[in-house]
Image (cartoon, rainbow, N blue to C red):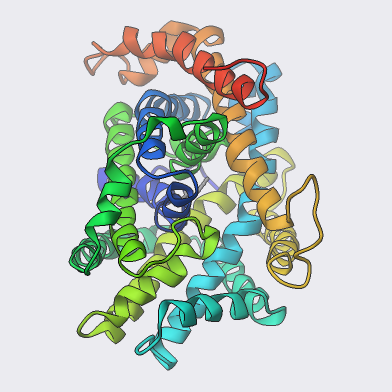
Length: 447
Ligand code: PHE
């Protein structure tokens, strides 16, 4: 494929925000918040987003646009082959993420189906929780739905209709946004809902332990699609005129807002209905349907919500599969078609493992984790922050500063008052933060 540029400014934003906003915001963020004690986690999360996430996103865009290559080729093209490891780690990370992401996206399709066929009316929170467990622990059905998701993603990439999807999602994502606000209002006005707000916004600092720090950092990387080459690959498709800093800022803000709205929809309902905030991956799939049961027109809202969530997930899976497709097709001179199909087959294999680990293989553990957990933990908590560490060290210390500055300022045509501060953050702050969070987790150092 020619390295085509994204068509317009809005196209760039739609694609990058489409990658960032997904299940990470609406499914993973609330359950991480719930498991890690609420407000304190959110505080650390915000700090990670703006101090670590935003600068790394800008760097990824700049590196991609400089190198004009896939995640690995970029480092070679810039004359720094030794940093290729970031590319390899990124490719591995993509497969791991897709392994469980496709499963969760499959769940959203099942919920579209359930919303249409049965509706959730009349169901109590216990019924919904039981229904989720019954469904997700089955063998065939969840795998079928993940396969549908993987095939759909592959088809979009092969047909080169990514642009079409972006056009559609540009119109639909604001709807998802509005729907989240409506859900939030309904959730807040449930009796006892305010307790949920307290959980979200009154931090208890004693809850911040090494695991909370690592989880919040991991969530920031995951939600912004950072540290594994996704934004490098997308950066390589951006036009030389695009204002990278502005795009990074917009994407970061939109992503954070969506995560926050999702938490505001979920937690008041959790408390109002006496559920546990720490339910893990099922949280959203139990809580949101419970809210629909309490809304006039809940049947329609539920369908709309899960359809939009599936589309949000699709724009993320497209970006994930694009990374590995670009990598294999450019590095191994494969046809894009062959590369995309091969990657999808590998992903399907991994999704089967992840899906079965919610049911018949729940007892198969590696390093104490089920496959689902393992894929999630290795990618979000370790590979992405390590990739991010590499990217910040590379762009802060290794890459010629003039080149970075010219790229970030569009050859000097944009003001770069923030440049010095940005480089300082890349050089010192981010490496220090990431390394101390890791050492802290290992118990070698305490913050
Ligand atoms: N950021 C996406 C989400 O929040 C997930 C993702 C991670 C997408 C890494 C691409 C790369 O759902």
